[in-house]
Amino acid sequence: MKGNEELVKALNSLLDGEFTVINEHIVQSEICAKSGCDKLAQDIRKRAMHEMIHAGWLFERIAFIEGESTISRLNSIKADKKVSERFINNENIEPGVINRYNESIKRVGQTDDQGSLDLATRVRIIEEDYADWAEKQEA
View 1: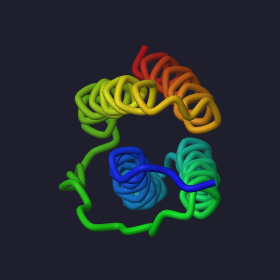
View 2: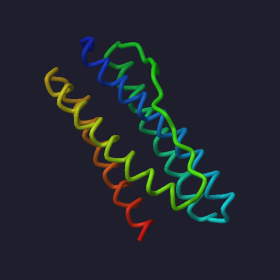
View 3: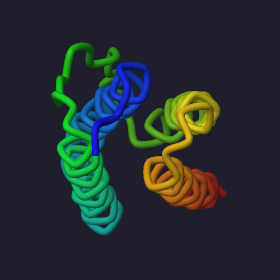
C-alpha cells in the first residue's frame, strides 16, 4: 500500500518525537538512579522501552505504506539535576508529546489511511496515561 508524502511526513515527525523521548527517559532514569530513587529509575527505564515499542510500530507502518523512515530532528533534551526537576520538566514535555500526536492525527485523518490513524490514536492514549502517571509521582 503506497502512502502519500504528507502521511509519511506525519509519521516520521512522530518517530522523531519518540526517539527524543526515549533518549530523555534514559537520561532521567540515570539521574533518578544516582539520586537513590531506584524504583523510579526502573519505572522510567521501562517507559523508555515502551517508547521503543512505539517507535517500532511507526517504523513498521512507514514500511507498510512504502515510505522511507527518517529520524531527522531530535528535540532538545533537558537533563535535570534533581529528581523533583524531572517531573516539573515532564509536565512541560508530555503535553507537547500529546499535542504532537493530536496534530498528526488531524493530518493523518485527512489522508484516509485508517491504519495509520488507529496507530497514532492508540499511541496518543498511551502517552496520556503516562502523563497521568507522571503527575501522580509528583504528589
